[in-house]
Structures are given as C-alpha cells and as structure tokens.
Length: 158
Ligand code: HEC
Image 1 (cartoon, helix red, strand yellow):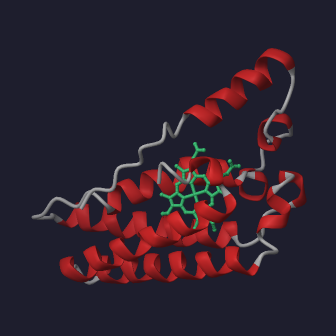
Image 2 (tube, rainbow, N blue to C red; image 1 turned 90 degrees about the vertical axis):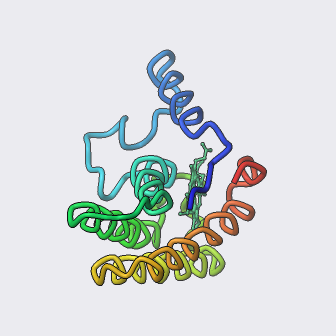
C-alpha cells in the first residue's frame, strides 16, 4: 500500500533553516544550542527525520520479502514506536509544542499510533505479511487525526 503525502514535506524545515542562517531568526532549538538531539528535537524534526522515512518503508511493502527486508520493516516499525515515546512530552523549549503534550487528545493519538506501530513491529518479526499490512494501515489514521487538531496548516494535505 502507498499513502502519498501531498504536502511538500521539506518546505517548512527548509524555510526555517534559511531564516535561521540568514538573519539569526527563529533558529530551531536543536540548531541554536549545542546538539542534544534526543531531548531537544522538535516535533517537526521527529516527523520529518523519523516518522516520514519509517512510514514510507511500512507503507511501500513490495513482496516477496527477503530476510533483510523483513528486518528493515521491523526496524522501521520500531523507529515509529520510539518516536511515539519521544513525542509523549513536548518540552517548553519547543514553544508552542509545550502545550501539545498536555492535551489528552495528543496522548490518545500517540496511544493509537504507538500500538499500531508495536503491532507492525511484532508482525514483521513474525514475518506475517497480511497482519503487517493491517498494522500499517492502522498507523495512518492517527497521523491525520492529530494533524487536523494540532497542525491545521497541513490538514488538507494529509
Ligand atoms: C500526536 C500528534 C501527531 C501524530 C500522531 C502525527 N503527527 Fe505529524 N505532525 C504533528 C504536528 C504537531 C506537526 C507540525 C509540527 C510543527 O510544524 O512544528 C506535524 C508535522 C508533520 C509533517 C510535516 C508537515 C509540514 O508542515 O511540512 C509530516 C510530513 C508529518 N507530520 C507526518 C506524519 C505522519 C506520516 C504521521 C503518522 C505516521 C504523523 N505525522 C503523526 C503531529 C502529529
């Protein structure tokens, strides 16, 4: 299955990097400070550098799969599980994002995404293609639901 993201996913990040370099304005926290990616990655960075590549892998399964491809799928699902954990508490350094994780709907979407991704991880480990595809489908609705509420600027594209 293939879900296409119709939005230009790099545009926002690129724009903020250009602004940051040109005028020392709006530098993302993780770039302005010394690097500590685990604690200071913004929601947007986690989306673009972890969630997007991992779900691209999960949503473009092309059987038959060899052992290394099964491992790749399992790792991709695990990356989404890990990202879900990191998104649980958005820090005050992230400005607006600080309030996001206080909202129980934010946490509910993460529950949904995390459990679907865990199921994808387990079914990839079992090499169960049909169950993996179903788990992959289940990863998608929380993307859309969360964006509708918390990132309305992109909701028409996802
Ligand atoms: C718990 C809420 C939540 C979930 C779940 C979520 N996202 Fe996001 N996503 C956000 C927020 C908030 C932003 C905007 C971050 C910002 O602009 O600072 C975002 C931004 C993005 C962007 C960047 C859009 C842009 O403006 O360029 C992409 C791509 C994206 N998400 C993909 C996904 C995918 C794919 C999934 C599901 C696998 C997903 N997201 C799940 C909250 C979520």
